[in-house]
Length: 206
Image (cartoon, helix red, strand yellow):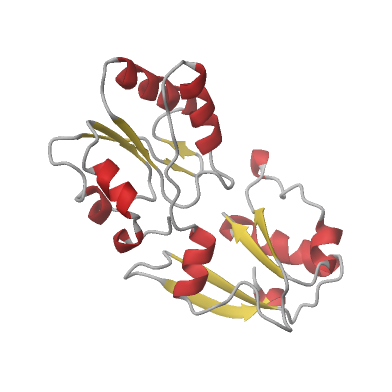
């Protein structure tokens, strides 16, 4: 989820308190880890741009090895692991290894951050739909998206991992017909005590 430990589901809390091993990401705060069983092994396997603490293949292998050793393993991921994340790859790797695995969904980052900021993602008379896109691209290029379609949809766009490409996102949307006066908001560390919200227009996004 978006980060507030009180937004964990009851099921997620129960699983944290029953885990033998927890592999956690950069977006998981210490206040969430303190809710885990005290004697659980905690392994940091986080990723930041161009800085992967543990390669993806090694994360998957560790999940498999701990499970085969008879451990109850929790893969704790912040944000939305199944939206522009590697959750699906990890799930498939463990399942392919013949290990019982399941996903416990939580509050999504997009809806959680928007609600915390008091911003509806859809609103009657303003926006009848919402589209999630990623600002991340291979080799540090511009995101390979259908900018013309996105610019003409006329509804809410939620951009994950978009800070580094904010200028390119604005340029591509405006260049394909989206008004520069379109309101935008950037939400950092949403739902947490350190939440920061910047409001402005698309033309100033960069």
